[in-house]
Image 1 (cartoon, rainbow, N blue to C red):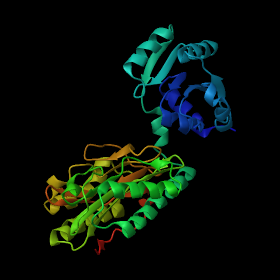
Image 2 (tube, rainbow, N blue to C red):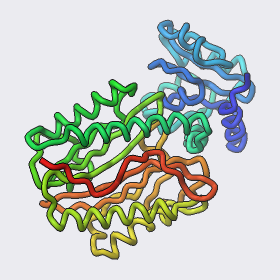
Image 3 (tube, helix red, strand yellow):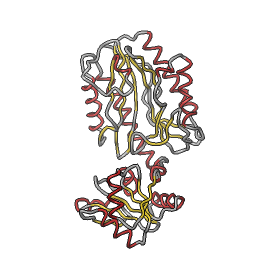
Image 4 (spheres, helix red, strand yellow):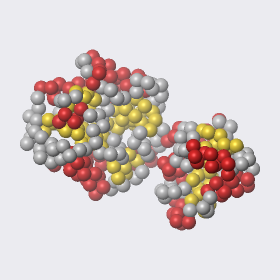
Amino acid sequence: MANSRVSRLREAMKLKSLDALWITGDVNRQYLTGFTGSSGYVLITLDKSYLLTDFRYMTQAADQAAGFEIVEHGSSVAKTLKELLAGQKISELGFEEENVVFSTYRAYEQELQPVKLVPSAGLVEGLRIYKDDHELALMKQAAELADQTYMHMLKVLRPGVTEREMALEIEIFMRRNGATSSSFDTIVASGERSALPHGVASDRVLRSDEFVKMDFGALLNSYCSDITRTVVLGKPAPKHREIYDIVLEAQLHTLAHLRPGMTGREADALARDIIVRYGYGEQFGHSTGHGLGMEVHEAPRLSKLSDDILQPGMVVTVEPGIYIPGFGGVRIEDDVVITEGGCRRLTESSKEFTVIDC
């Protein structure tokens, strides 16, 4: 059976005049082959597909990487690679410049002579940016687990526990319900620490009458989710409600108007302009969103510096926020897929202003 991802990659290679591409990135390797082992390399030529791995994974690779010729490499991967290139009469080899450190490049340069190394970037990532129906179904499952986790946390959040304890509760719930791991270091930030956009959980004890911001995601079936919800423990102050309502307005406005053909900067402005209008532009210092998939941060970017063009099949986060040092902060984040007519939410849990009585 033909591998459509490899076929599309070959078309991209032809546009770059590449006869062969050496793929070393773990996620790119899995995306192309389906192989989930921890060690391996992929060589794609215009008519051959190789997966190189070591003795430990030969059986697994044969089971998972349909359509690939499985090659066991010895202690020198470069030696095996050189033999394959010679057999295919390949004189130039593209490599993933963003996944190869300089010392490895120098070793390849020496050991693969006379093959010329050609740096390339974004060829596989350019395929991964568009999710097919199967991928979207997997991402919906990861999003549903994030939603379920949030609903669980509403039952257990209370004063007197630490942020770390609540972060652990999030991660245990996700793992018990099928996640391989969390998508990233779980953020639970309370009180004044909620003003830290990436305030990874600390030993701070949750108290009454303050924000609790939770940013987390599940890695499920090799795909990530990423959600943020902010709640109030106890009695909210007027300021809590004020900044929450502004962030929610900005987020809902963005979801209502996000559409294909927009640039990342235009999408970012949908949220940013509202927050600026209310006088909190200086308190919104990060981008409105980012791409999501097998990694938690992928292209495209929803940023005031981004010229990425949104297209159907791309999955992005929408996550405006306001952060006031010494008081606290709000972020509200959903995962959405760009559609022909706009966007569709993958995360669907409530974003109403939520107060947990305590």
